[in-house]
Length: 346
Image (cartoon, rainbow, N blue to C red; front, side, top):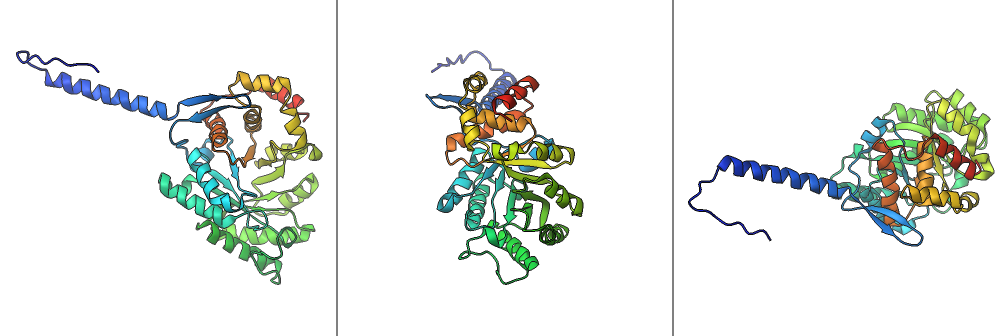
């Protein structure tokens, strides 16, 4: 403690006192803000995770999209009764983009809506601070005992009912991105679904459209060519069996389509390659794990990987990669990207 001795005979300069207090307040504020985003390194045998002190990222989805820089999506598949809690934690950790589907077989869409609402309330977020993406899933991808629409209704009506269910489940007046979970059994049916999705864009209920699980370049080109409202998203499994979608990713880059990847860390080949000594050393040099280095690699390529982690420390670590890139940092230069591509066998 610093003891202040008073001098009663000396006259104080009140303006100097006020100025000193004002400067001290500014200093404390700056230190406080800086401390909020200071990364505390946690070292263990398997992880080197940076965890922010206090509440994470203050970025909004609107601001991130306006920057034109890549971002991460929080994936919500297979989380069942834990969905609401995990979505809440993900948003608190800094995720602003959330992916789900109107497919009770694999997703708890009402739980996603509940987690979003609770996080918005706690963090005082507006709807535009978040980006919500969901999907229409055809009958052959649904659990016949838990259908979100009438299986006897015409295909177009099934799509409309699915969208209505999503709006209700997610407690929102609009959906930022509606993705066709998979192309239909033929192109004609795919375009029947697409026309209804376009109708909902025109109605203001959907902001953009996309396609998932489409691994044939010609099929995706046909959808793009025949669509009035072009797909802005292609979300695919990122794995060696599809050749890592090299041709599709190039097509997306040339047509202003954002490529979203799932299974980014968990496919057998990638998981094995991330154990390579060269990748482990590269990650260590950048204060990352091989897993967060993989996300950095995808982001530097301009892609949007999904993270479905259920570990809050990993949530913070994943968000910190996005924040570094949003702040203008180049985590991997061109030479390092080429090296990673070779090491990953892409």
